[in-house]
Amino acid sequence: MSERVCYLDNAATTYPKPPGVSKAMLETMKNIGASPGRGGHRMSLMAGKVLFGTRERIAGFFNVPDSRNVVFTKNATESINIALKGTLRPGDHVLASGVEHNAVMRPLEKLSRGGVPYTIVPCGRQGFLSPDDLEKAILPSTRLIVLTHASNVTGTILPVLEVGKIARSRNIIFLVDAAQTAGALRIDMEEMNIDLLACTGHKGLMGPQGTGFLAIREGIKLDTLVEGGTGSRSESIEQPDLLPDKFESGTQNTPGVSGLEAGIAFIENEGLDKIREREKALTRKLLEGLSGVKGVEIFGPLDPEKQTAVVSFRVSGKDPGETAEILDSKYGIITRVGLHCCPLAHKTIGTYPEGTIRVSPGFFTTDSEIDYFLRSVGKI
Image 1: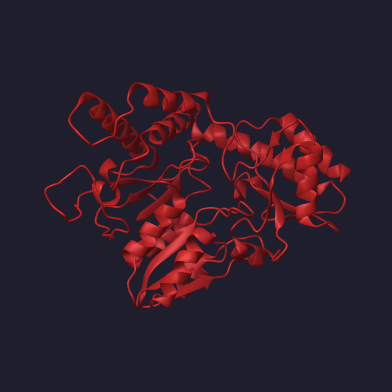
Image 2: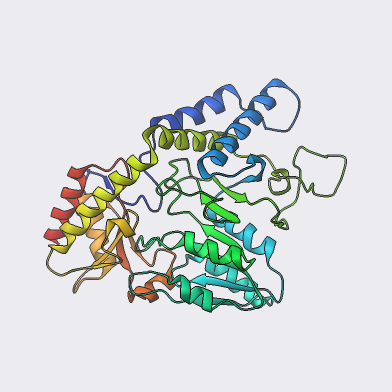
């Protein structure tokens, strides 16, 4: 077992985190500790300021006009479930792409059993989606389009801007799963005509696990999945309709939210363009290096301009699981192997059911780590 650790699984969760993330969380736990919105004492008010400040930072980062429309969740999956199940009713129709994650597909499959059919718009073998194909698939009953911003299997960037224009022109609700792109690519809710933006905090935003949010465009009405105490309008047993309280029943993860704000602050201080350029350089190095290894097949765009820092590959004649296990046990290289909770994408690119080995560097990945990974693959 190798004692060295070379972490290349940032598409699952970014590691390491900026030092300010754990510092902010520890300070919140040590110096605040109380529940936000659960009393008028100073500690509760301080906790409330943590939530407010993070909401404001998120709103500014993604151009959400009113920070009250930023609802905290525990991850992108919860955000997607709120968006889909809070919007759709029997008779509604949904469009989705051929590379959607199970965070989208499983809720859609359950909804379909209750009278909400969906259509998968096929993507090409590299994961690209044609906006024209999507527009042709729209039915009179189409109520919502859900689209991942980038594939978690190939990194392929999907045409969110173009699809947003189509959705707005047809008065269709547009939900974007930004789990793979928040903190990696620029996202502007207004410019991209996004009605519902589902994000996780622990990937590109560099926050802790257990954090996420759903940003809701003004005028979009959703039903709740969970009801309970909100610290507001406690005289009524009816769930309050005001945002964000409507979707934030129960005590919030204040330390986690403070860590999320610190992660976004780090991105803002470094600059999103700088982070993107660094990750493109690492992706380019990976693609060029793997293409020179005999027996390696790479999937996806093979172009850093058209993908996030995600590269999927297989070694000819070897089971992907076996290859990944050797990389881990012998060389200390952490990757992700299998179907990546996304069988639909693997069917699209022709790697189902075996899957692929996914390598995903992050902002803190070094050139020497990529070199070490490439040398190790060459020895297998």
